[in-house]
Amino acid sequence: MNALLVALGGAAGSVLRYWMSGVAQRLAPATGAWSLFPVGTLAVNLLGCLLVGALAGIADRRGALSPETRALLMVGFLGGFTTFSAFANETVAVWRSGAAAVALANVVLSVVSCVAAAVVGRGLMAVILK
Image 1 (tube, rainbow, N blue to C red):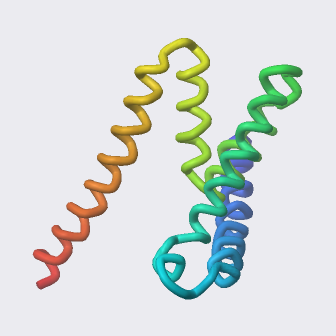
Image 2 (tube, helix red, strand yellow):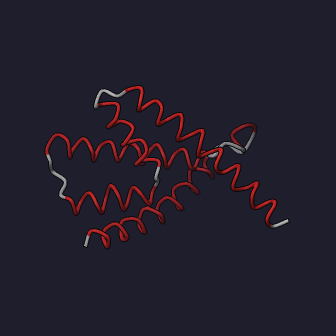
């Protein structure tokens, strides 16, 4: 049942991400550096992180989120809306546990290694599809 909830939430979150990031990008100035900056992605990531933080706060303080609600909203919807929200929430949890160095390492390693992996993936395809 939880897998179905994740799938349903993920579908809804993905569609909303597509729509919202497009709207945000169209509303951004189309000149200078703004024309290159991924405003839509940033907007979605910020909103997703705000929402996952709010839901985690509710769960922490009141225990108000059932496993099914977490599956639907946090894993499914926000996971489909932006996987950055999961990264942010996990990093905050590590930070709050007292392991600030581990949280910082997660931020640096995740950002740098994922950008590097995207560069390598593009490079591999450039060679393979030549």
